[in-house]
Image 1 (tube, rainbow, N blue to C red):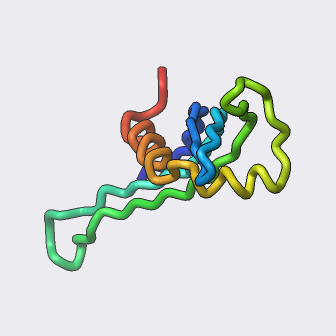
Image 2: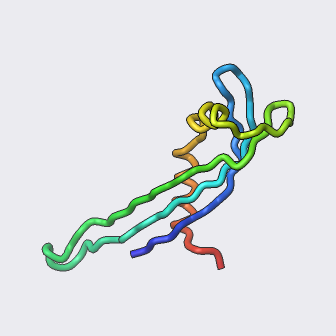
Length: 103
């Protein structure tokens, strides 16, 4: 069984429905779990592999299309958070988990 928390910062370009673009630094934490299971031996001792991932994402800062740093107000966060490529971020963190810890 392997459990590890993977953390990575991403730079994401987010475009709103009113064609405003923001460049945001995003920090993501993912607690990943994997147990390979057992596929040989007596049937009563075999079980499938299990995995799970719990990911949180936080926008650290962002600039607008003019390069001006924007204050992360609740309204701006409510606009930007749904635009984050969450599935892609989670996939990147899972790949890092499978690669193992850096030496």
